[in-house]
Image (cartoon, rainbow, N blue to C red; front, side):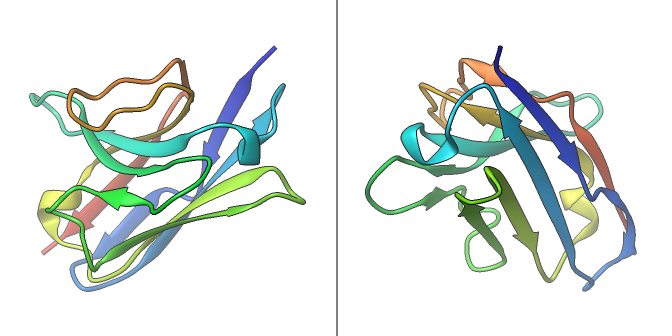
Length: 120
């Protein structure tokens, strides 16, 4: 059974950094597309970044140059390093796997989410 469990969310001041982790089980993350999405209160879910099985990782324009997705195959864990955080980055962040597109925000499997709050 596929499971994705996020951790690492929290509160941070603008300009700060956070690293989210997503522990995967039931599949191998290097054999699947994986990515991160977010949803702010009152807004639709949006894609943050998509790491395909092969090829370059793609990012939403709003996070390009500030956020980086990496994966550790040995730990079967996906990460989202977020730097230079802005209040508009405040959202619930979800990791996802399988059939990922950023626009529209689509994936086969979803984690339960972790909250990130950025204060000004």
